Length: 138
Image (cartoon, rainbow, N blue to C red; front, side, top):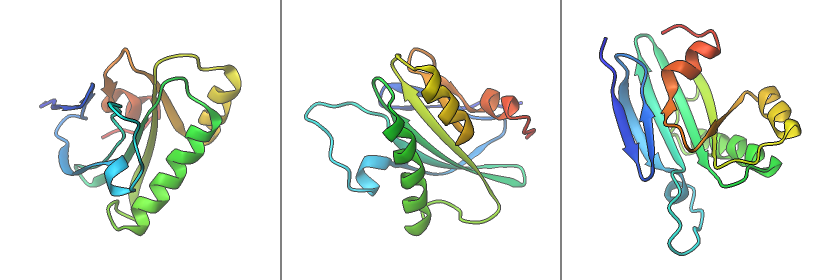
């Protein structure tokens, strides 16, 4: 079993075993979002191939997460489909909110309903574990 890790700015992402990275892009650049001066966010979109499955993954890097971050993730995903960056059909959708802390129970509840994974910045993002948590086997 081969495990690959990729580093995007200040974030390490562990890919599922035998995953092939098909596409990777900076979300802020492709969606023309402006960053504050010297801001080092790891907003990224990835397309992975894992066996017969394709994974469309959008990661929003934020400080203290807010409800608007969930909406922003969903809107970013839809815009990336429109721009033909993400695979529109037969793909598994993963939205990740990567934060520095301060998650309240309302946000967690709404994130769960929207199938948004909430991951603390102090940890690397382990996509394999997140997929297994969703009971999705690769």
